[in-house]
Image: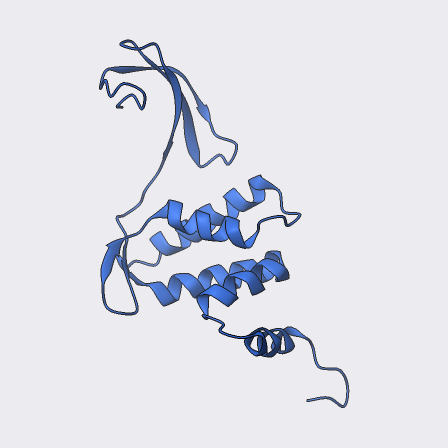
Amino acid sequence: MRCPFCGNIDTQVKDSRPAEDHVSIRRRRFCSACGGRFTTYERVQLRDLVVIKTNGRREDFDRDKLERSIRIALQKRPIEPERIDQMISGIVRRLESMGETDIQSKMIGEIVMETLARIDTVAYVRFASVYKNFQAADDFDKFVSELRPTGPGEK
């Protein structure tokens, strides 16, 4: 592992233990050249996924990009960080276990929305506003009205 401080490729693992999410290994490392200490995380990757964008462009799946978008949607919401990590790991496992290496970006968005809808309605609406490209307040109003249950006599 390359040292992030000096670029030396000869670093040593000082300590390894399961991370809090229990799906990755946390490693404390030491650089013998500059004395820097840093942490890395190692997780199982079942297969290399490729995302097919709506315009047809292909790019490697980026777990960090998925995590950033979910954390933005959940920003300042009362959801524990461990729960967020578990949710992200669950989404990635679901994508990897689909049996396909090429996954439509639309499918990823739908899975994220489905997961957020079960965890936090505000985060669900936040994510949907970007994913569905809301342009005006009316878009929010229409989307939120679809979330509300209809009472007796209403349609």
